Image (cartoon, rainbow, N blue to C red; front, side):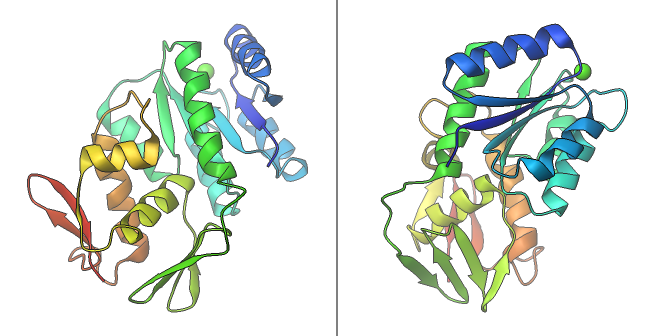
Length: 229
Ligand code: CA
């Protein structure tokens, strides 16, 4: 997969700085200074691996761009750039289909590290064999990075796929939030454990028969989660 990143940021100085550092990191970069332009550019650049979306924009905001990309089925990893620190905003971002968020002011080194981590997950392991993992009604294809339930494909973000794969590779084993964070987000992730809960809440909505009474991703009280199927 191409090392191609979309940077949507309306402030020229911040955007240029991010672009410069991503190029140094070996990425091809597509730039947009508005949500409208980002959505216009996307159809010709569907091979974008990671999209960095600023939330606060004059027209269509970053959340709306994120939601639109997901609705249209784009599989890119998405990082939201938010100036706001309220927990609710982070949750809003993740619920719209983002994989990660970085709060302004941010360190560009950290941002590039997050892009690297997300890119590795999106690109996957090119040497993976065509193995599938089956568990109950679920079938996960490691090469296609695709999950089916009763033969029907489930649309997942990269992070949701990573979580599901981690669970299905550890059937019946209780995993702590720390375990999940490390296995899905990687050793160098510097965010909060809460991101695990938010993603699992969203994943349950997509895969459980009754998300209010989850039977596949069960909660291990005071510890974490366990896959049962
Ligand atoms: Ca902005």
